[in-house]
Length: 220
Image (cartoon, rainbow, N blue to C red; front, side, top):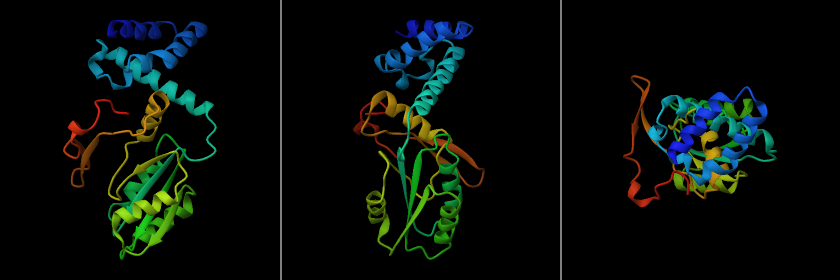
């Protein structure tokens, strides 16, 4: 199969001058190849040539962009729920990483869990400048109650849980949306990195998740 797909990537790289031929192969790739060959879960070396993998990545983003353009989002696709307690040091970075997402159809539900620092003030500031940010205030009842409170006020088709010291990579929601388009999953499991304040760099880690307890696919 990977030889067939590698040949397809080569074809994509050579037929762009023919809009009709490109569209035929593009439609076939979008409706058949991605799911049938489970391409979203293949490693980078699945395609023998790194150039072809880059073409695949570009093509995948083009497919997702096409679907985003076709869909009419009358409500948020994602509800991002963040319990907040005394997080003023990290909160702005967290919210900025969400609001700068390449996928724009989401709401951010921040549940202030009785913060005693400037967290609530920061939340109100962001809610004022972006109407996708909603703030709920409650007495200190800990993160679990705060998340449930956020769920009760959510409108999105999918729930995304973040802590107030977490960051999202720029295309995270767009990648989630791609998995939703092609797999219709109930749950999406994403990777994670540890971010160092000192050097402002991220390092991959799998320590947070015991992969023995989940299916092998990213989406299921």
